[in-house]
Image 1 (cartoon, rainbow over the protein chains, first blue to last red):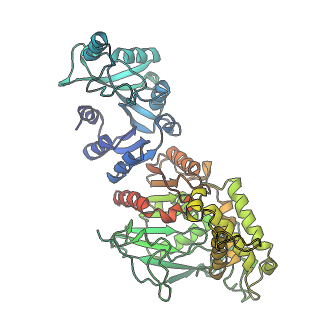
Image 2: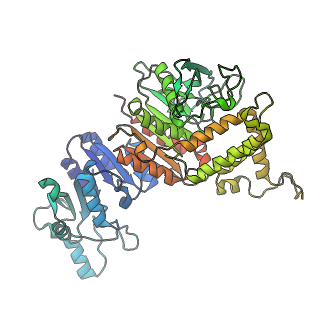
Image 3: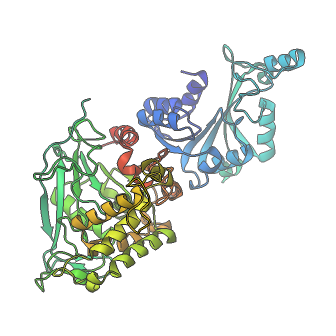
Length: 198
Length: 373
């Protein structure tokens, strides 16, 4: 069980309706379905990973993340999960705003590019950083962007997105102090401001 | 688990809609009495929760699996239906009925018109996919099945699965539409029109009243040849025939030089022996009339609990993948939990009959997780 999956499972209520974008082999959705009796839907592009999802009895659509959201009516799901895909998608802003439309709440998890090991690696070795959360060489990485915890906070502030919960993970569990320096992974639960005020 | 053929099956018949209680059709006309020929595989369980309805394609019939007495050919989806197979007959009660308008035991244009004592021919009313599904619903009622575990089919069978979900959303738990569409595109209608014209251009068609003089064999054979071209892909034809010759040299005559020509003629003229030309006209028209796009699909349903497995094949150009993706888009709007696969295959539209392994892998796992409570 991956630590970020554990945190996401803690966030989600029993019997919630959940959409996971880029669900991979469906480990998280399978866990949510078993542990939380959640109604789960995945979207994934990779055919082999999809087959594994179906073997687990998950419903999964073949499709890419950018176009996967547009046909769902407003507030179709209790949660939309964007875990470890922010760094891989092209239209991040569009995907976040569409996820906020489709889901009551959105869970965003991403590797923090401002972790001290990343800063050190770039400053002293002069090489693209590689760590547990960013395990790829430049020539094989699926990542098209890097972002930091502070970047994400700035983004939410600018867009008027409400941050409901935040979790920071280091190599050895939760991080409380100086998350932008000490956390390798961040998980945010966000929602739309206006919806809550209505 | 051991996978084996279902073994011997027996055709069964169900007659309903005896006049004056005729079956109301979408056209406003009515039909009765109506007979459905059907086959069943496996046992219906005590709470009648394990029934799966298989719907056939344009030229299919109720013989989906196993062997009939006096017929060495296994059913058209035999690889998918049987003990241990995708539609596991040791767990499920599987049934398949010939559509109305067909010519394999169900009421169609070749059946006897009760008022004239002669075949209906073109006095047979126009039927639609919704009418076919209505007739199946009568059979399901007769068998005492309140809720089908699944309705599954490819091509026109997939349309019926969609129509079931739309007409009777409370009567099924899941649907598996394969290699199908919400509506025919102008290209698909155009192919069907050429198919119909080739039948009607044959003088032996006699405006549909040919039952005493014999089938319009040439027209029907050409119609079927057109069909077969659309069922294959450029790649599968290359693999199957290439430019191989039937004899060593070119004949320099209008005979069958290429193997593909021989194949089409063989398929075309073989079809004439087993299919009624008027049925082909009626059913292709039903395909063209079918349209569940937009608000027509599940009109009174905002959120559906019906689960869907939608499958398309990358090389299918008769029912291209984008048409299945349109189904998926519509299902999203109905909040339907949906699995969609665009499978890799070189077989074109035929893939739904051929790619048994991939289909088995998906269908078996999908069905295993359908909630029956």
